[in-house]
Amino acid sequence: MSEGLVIHQLSVGPLQVNCFLVACQKTREAMVVDPGEDADRILSLAGIEGLTINVVVNTHGHFDHIGANQQVVTATGATLMLHASDLSLLQNARHHAQVYGLTVTQSPDPDRLIDQGDTFMVGEHEFKVLHVPGHSPGSICLLSDGHLFVGDVLFAGSIGRTDLPGGNFDLLVSGVRKRLFCLPDDTIVHPGHGPDTTIGQERRHNPFVGDGVNR
Ligand SMILES: [Zn+2]
Ligand SMILES: [Zn+2]
Image 1 (cartoon, rainbow, N blue to C red):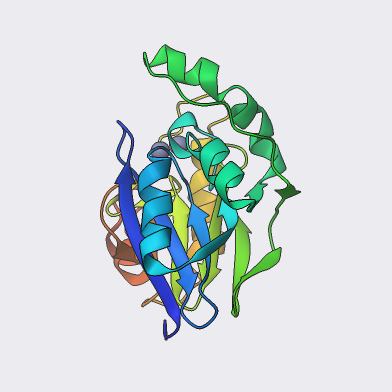
Image 2: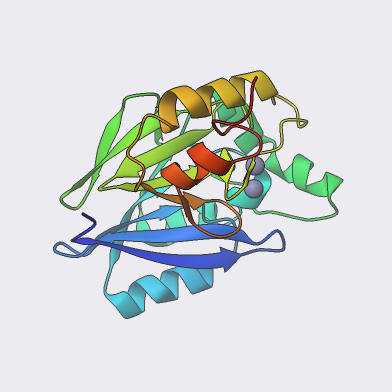
């Protein structure tokens, strides 16, 4: 099912964000999902693998997911994509990082704003954008070939926190159920923190949003 799509995972930055380098095996074109930090590691891995990064996507605008945007985009000329509803988070990321005593490099503004139902190509692979707000207003998930990149929307056995500015618990739960739990059970979920899981596992067993929870 995932033939031809190569996924490398790197844990980056002090908050251990999962950054994904996702490549079309055939054309060697690649996307970086959430370059939170450690641009040098991301770029050198792409170099070792012989990949051309032409897309950078932030699943949302929280500072821990965007810190290497500037370096990666400058080095590669990649198209930077984000949902419009997280633009102010992206633009104010340095301020948000300071609250945690951390610093991040200011990101450039996105080249393309993406929303529910939009698609884009990474080599020969089409990615579809799913808008699932609630962790942040502009949180998006990316779906291709049975792989789903979810940022901080959904984790193995948990969901994203909703107590940050713009968070909304009810929106997050309804969005996960409406837009993600309709996907096939064997869809592989790649969260922004922690281990991979599957849609079937979370639909059945997730204690916040799974079938057993009445909300
Ligand atoms: Zn977040
Ligand atoms: Zn995060």
